[in-house]
Image (cartoon, rainbow over all chains, first blue to last red; front, side, top):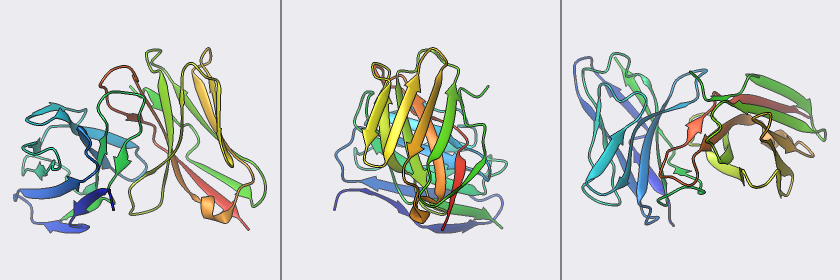
Length: 113
Length: 113
């Protein structure tokens, strides 16, 4: 089945540690995105990538880093510089260009303990 | 500043009646609009979209209306069913570019049997 897989579904991190969230897609999509959702908030864009080896900062990129070494994969690292990392993280992908919907993974709930 | 606004955090309707979810946008460059449905702890799923060359798009029980002069769109669900209870997000982008989706904060719909 084609789709986007995020792992793990739940993740706990100690303060001061970096953690990497996985996102893999087999939809042959060029574009991939990371969003963050907080209670009562919409989805806010962290980073996006339209092509392999290239990515752009979104609205809330501080404290996060990404890589796009393969078309299928777009991992997100939450660094210790991120002040409020506890949130629900969503990865999405779409065909390149506009007039198209993005498909989302099931999300990763990150909790800092 | 929010470019996509969903001013009603919640909406409650009776099963079988019409649900109307509203969305306003401020950026006149947006030319592609989407609605997503989201259950708790899951990723959003695409419902329906509309480009700015149209003023209506229908898919089964779901209809999206676009009023460009008012920078307003709405999602109508007829008839509403208990399974429609979820958070609905409005999103917009510059369809002709490689831009990303800008989301509203969502409206939680509760359909009562």
